[in-house]
Length: 192
Image: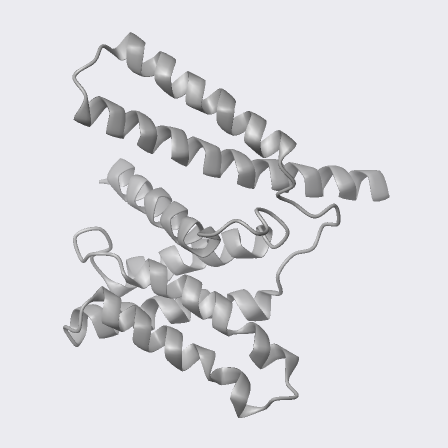
């Protein structure tokens, strides 16, 4: 039973690292191909070299804890709320994504002051702020509130699964939001 559980935890961790690695490689290849007029073979060699370096980095740097913990579902459900709030302020109030993210982020930072003894309220600013990164998306990328909500839910799943992954690395919340926006945009493109 415990071995099965440990294998599942390792598989989830591996899945999250592979998603980040694949996104990095996809966009590196895209940037190289778009900005430099080189053959596909040379682009493949460059991206493969970078992939090997990234794999060494992920393997040998201490980016994870050894224990396997997941974020609480009651906490990560605030990710889509932050996404929708930021999107509404940005698009419908026409304040722009930067101001919208700032307003939602600052408001979220004051939530723990409502009850200083509440451990739950202390955990809310991070997922709400993660959601603001999703909500900063352009109307051309996420055209409706339903897309924003679904993308926020996917970001919540990624945040739930990545509690002990990439610790001490800046940009984790933005990467989670970015990955969820890319996945939902890709799925929408495949369906359309």
